[in-house]
Each structure stands twice: as structure tokens, then as C-alpha cells.
Length: 296
Image 1 (tube, helix red, strand yellow):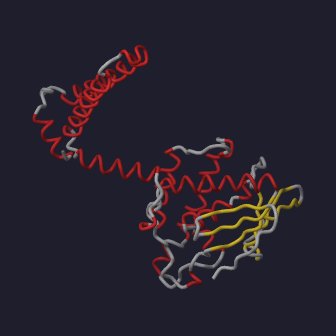
Image 2 (cartoon, rainbow, N blue to C red):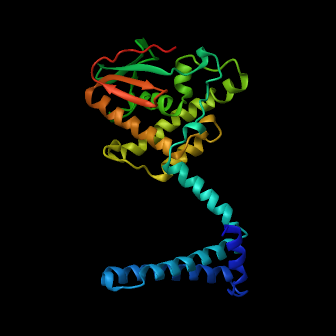
Image 3 (cartoon, rainbow, N blue to C red):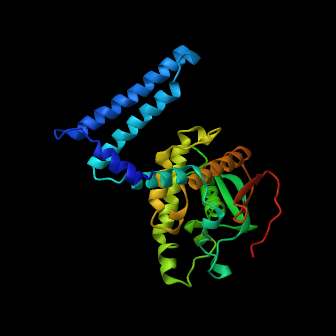
């Protein structure tokens, strides 16, 4: 049976009345949910002596489905559209994008306008005037100025370029890295202005501040495997108007977790080498020098 057919037939049996039917449906849903709880309480108490358990659960779930359908119908919503939207949401949250659906954002641009497929970054820590700083070298060449934490309390934010670079490796995106490496897509004026322009760069930096603030409240994600939905949804919302909006919440989660896995190692060792690989979507840390693989 299709959702559309169920919704129509279910509403043929609607006897909620004309006075506050939505309220009645909501109370009905709450009551049936309570009935499910009662069944499981009895199952826990009686064990195998509670016969007919699955049939009872099936019946209660059916009643819950009926009340959900009633609420949707009263609000003028399609049960089919609700189901489609929900499966898209849960797929984005928990599953990676399939290889056939993966989009390489700059593959059709000239090589000098593409983010590097593979590169190695060296993070060189130093102390100047009692301020901890880090210098970043990409394939042996200095990238920008030395960075410090810009904080009253040292917190390792100076290593935040790891986030931008991990975004390159796992998402194929980072307007910040693209600008620093002079890989902006100037052959296409609109792409250069929108995807690689100032607004995109500000969003890229804002994401760093967002995820770093979250990480500081959660032990820098040490031993954490799952991130809060609100964080991932906000990352997606902030970037939804850009090409990276095609990436799933799951891919944002993996990017953030990998960022702080590497960040913790770099922080612990006071620097090190990190290899980023777009082709394999991988990031690797080493305390000793990694072989530099020049970009094409």
C-alpha cells in the first residue's frame, strides 16, 4: 500500500469530530505512545510469559500511524512527502554520498584553478615574545603569516588551518585555502565572485570559529564519535547557498571529527607534518617528515 492510499483510506475512518479535531488527534497520539510504553513495561516484567507481544505492538504502532496521518491531513500535509523528506534528512545525517553522486567542484577548471589533489602541510611551532605561534608550510613553501591563538588564554586556535585543509581533502572545498594558494577560478567570473569570493571566505572562517567553540566544550572531541545535529545542521545551513551545500551532514561530521583528531596530535606534539589527499579523502599525521607529493 502506498502512503497516498493509506492516508486517504485512514481519513475515511476519521471520527475526531468537528470541535478541535487536531487537539483530539494530539491527545490520541500521546495516549497510543503511552500504550507502547505500557506494553514494554509488561514485557520487561513478565518476560516470555507475556504472550502475543508482537501482535500487540503491531496494533499500537498502527494506531500511532493513524493519529500521525490524521495530524498530517488536518494540517494539509502529504504523508508521502513527509516520508520522502524524512528519509532524505536521515540519509544526509548518517550516510556518505555515493561515489556516483559525488561532485568534484573544480574538475572542469584549468589545473592552476583547482585545489591540489594531494599536498603536505608542515606546522612549525615557535615562541616569540612569550607568545606561541605556528608557521604553516605547504609542500615546503610558506603559507601566509605566522599565526597565534589571538586569545587571552592559549587554546591552540593557531592550528586552525587544519580545518580548512581537512575541508579540502574530505569535502573538496575551502575558499580560504583556494585564496592562499592562488587557485581561485578566475576563468569563470561568477564562480570567482560567488564560490571563491569574500563572502565564501568569511563563511569558511566562521565555520572554524563555530566548530572550535563547540570542540572546546566537548574535550576537543576526544573519544567523541557522534556530533550534535544542531552543529551539523548549522554548518550545512551556513553553506547551503554554495557548492559545498551538496555535501551531507554525515560528511560534515567526518570532516570535523578528522580535523580535531589531527589537531589534537599536532597540539600534543607541538607541530608536525600532515598529508591531505582529495583522491582518497584522507588525512594523515606524522611527527616525522612525510614525503611530499607535488600537486599535478
